Image (cartoon, rainbow, N blue to C red; front, side, top):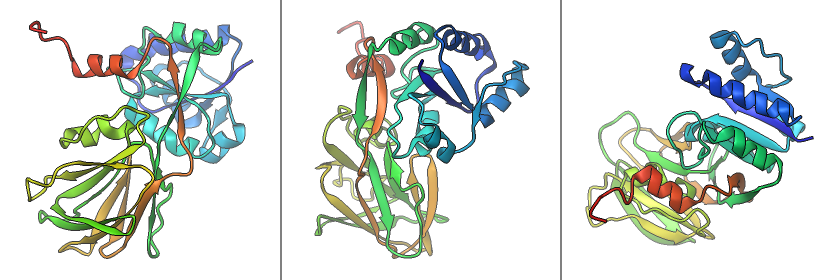
Length: 294
């Protein structure tokens, strides 16, 4: 009997039949189901489903439960939030998308019941995704200290650019005069990094990307680096603090605080079905090949 925890946030009203089918499929398969308390409360209040499933309430209770899978219902942002709960536990994540196709939540509503059955029968593979880890020199505490998509530093409370002094493995790399700087994983290369003109990497590429946000010097371009290096960032700005975002979490750090970024000591484990692969997701998400001249 498989044990599955379910995490979600806001679900559109039209997704109610889909949620009911998912829960019905898990019941038919004899799964032991636990649901995040906030999600179960929202479903009952919105749709009066009368759910009374066992609940978990935090990252600690989820990790103590140690289910076979954490099924995340929502979009890519919901999966990034769920990563904060999974942490270093190694619990595999299943992404069920309730909206448009996502890069992380790539199982659609229509596919979900059949895909879940195949996953429970063992017809899946685990992709271990590289993760970033950061630490701040000083009293500032970054908790959680990891990011699956990206870590970004940016200006705070001003329209003026900031100066970001970057060292790689102890050697000076560059001073970025810009609105900010993104350090992206291959998984995050299709997110904020892509919006700022950075390249797309295959998910298992052993690299990270440095992508400036609106740089003053147009010759300063995104840079792909090996993921076994250590980055040190020091910020100069007109304000007393700057922002450090780690996926969906934002911290305020004092200017002058040195930020150390490197590959984390663990990887997130994403469940992939046989029907999905990254090139197919790219084509569908970015509409490649729809030009009739191709």
